[in-house]
Length: 193
Image (cartoon, rainbow, N blue to C red; front, side, top):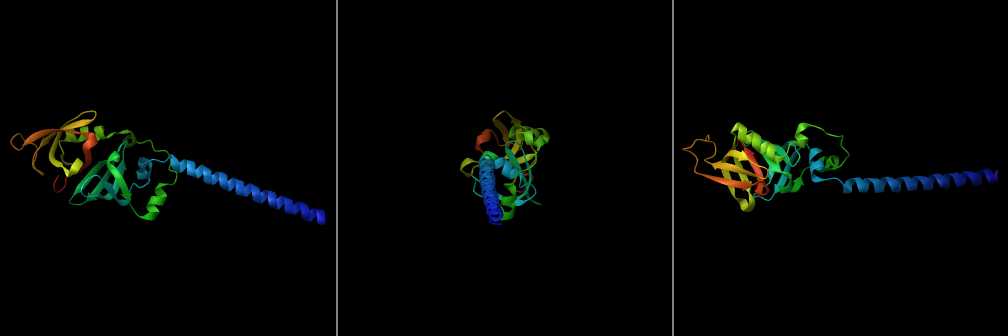
């Protein structure tokens, strides 16, 4: 009887040590997974949520996250203000509800949609093709309203004109070439866009 109890105690102790070791390995694996998680992946986990993106601009961009591309995020910023495209490198912070932030850190299934591969240049070239009026918010709070004429690999040409006016030669007050790296927000179809 005493031997039986001795072996049961040893078995319980061994099981306990194995569980502790397994828990430690699981914890370390989770730490390693989180250390490899990028801001873009966290944004993908927040698609459909209301949040604010703090960018290097006077005001954060607030709205519902509608999509994430290779290096940009899009938000629906309200009925009258339209939409915004934010280059991911311009994002300083994401402000969202704690449950949403925690959910965004969980492993997500592999996404292979076209928008996942589209870079900022692709999106800006599409805006140029469609002749959609934009407002660019750039470094040091500078902003320009107008229509994108061309978008290159790392810059765009903007025909500057009043917000809300169609691009007509008579309405254009100037042209500027803007580096993608200077752009913090591209506002579409809104007041001031």
